[in-house]
Image (cartoon, rainbow, N blue to C red; front, side, top):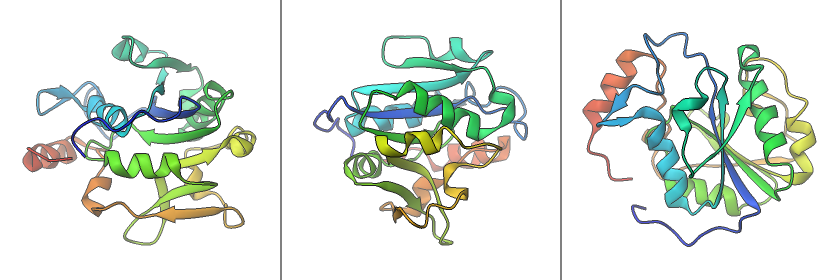
Length: 198
């Protein structure tokens, strides 16, 4: 999916989780360039192509200025040092008036716009199925589960918690789209994959 899809219902939101510390990366990870664009913009632009009208970015206090502009509503996570769960809580609060929320990591440059749209249009809790069988991000949740998201703690994503009673998983078209950037070596590998038709 390269062109923008039909706009989604504005009550369906996406939250770009971009408040991580990036401790394994030398330098400012999300501001680092990949294909002459800041790393975070790759995932952000996939969300735009997927048709999301309501878009939040969860940033840390020191990184919020990186995302300034009209396209994304910035939600500052003052507790970012607590780990990923704090950003999920922040996203759930930002989307409190929405019917559904898709969580997207800002360091996944090759995420498929079509996969994000499928998560958005799904029902219940819907995770991404990884090749090793685990469930993870991107993931989507209905409003009825926002309170549960708001109770998460620690440095693990929602997929690491027990949702067996109420969740399903969806595989992307290509498992290569799930590549995420943790180190400068990962960024170099991503650069070697360009150009990528997403």
